[in-house]
Image 1 (cartoon, each protein chain N blue to C red):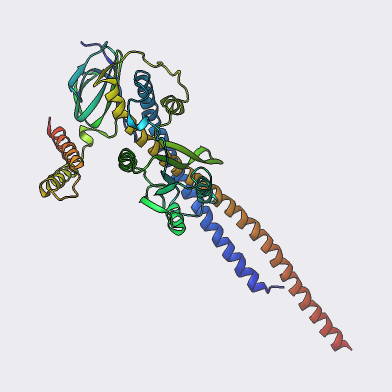
Image 2 (spheres, each protein chain N blue to C red):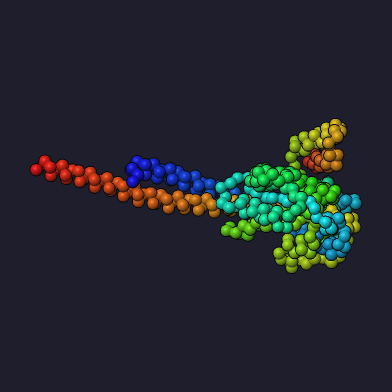
Length: 135
Length: 299
């Protein structure tokens, strides 16, 4: 059994996760990384994507994060995200709607479309639906 | 002297007003609790962010990001004015607007100032005075403040700062220092004053469980990371200001309504005295009449 360490996921609105975990993997901006207890101190920017972790009982859990930062310490991982949701809290209908909206905006190619923003919105929506759909 | 009926209807109307003000006070109290909870919930994020920012700021030079560099000549200034949407909260909005006016006549004299207004009261004031308004956000302060509002407007500001459309950005908001104390405060948010200051500001107790960690491995480089974190820091400042202003608004309204309720009670007491006096005078007059009539009959 793996050693346990602490995971905290905080957003401006509230703390999403605060519990003991066995391992975590997160979407760093330079690539996905994984951390166990005793990882060297490490600071990374995160992309939009999914965080996977094994909770104290070894059950695998998923979270959605819309970018942010992760601070990894030997006995604690802190994730600062502008928004984050547990899989069960994802509103899949809303995500689907957002996805089609973003796709439409991107395909319309109107002059005033903020491409970067629309792409980010699309990415967020896609990851949300993907995470909500995995079992 | 007012007639009995007049006094009585006045008493009824003041009592009704008291009912309304005390109901509004209760609403403000419960909203205040919500706003305070939101502030509480934001604290862990803000302090953790400041901690991480502090630990990488130490490693980067002062010129790591264009957001840190002050402009040599400041011509255009943006003021973010946070006020409430609704009145009936005492001098709350007046104080904030006063602060803006003072800035306009002192430090910002002769500079080109544009406003970004959060809240209807500040917007109305800016419109009346004919100030340029870059953007306005109504229905944010006092309700459920979303982080996306802060990040959206913050991004716009950062963009215009980088393009050179504005040289300095200030935030005017009401700092919530306690139930009876809300202080209108001015804070410079762009260019970012000095990282040490920002960090010290957020971290009231720097020596929490773990002090700054001297050596992080950073991915990407610490400079790149700093470049990503600084704009976020601006959003955090705006979000914090909005939360503080919301909380202050409810606290101010609560107090204003409490005072109004008390004033109503005093007034009812005074009116009641007048009512009793008038009533007694009428009775005395009637008695005199009767006694006088009886005397005349005896005659």
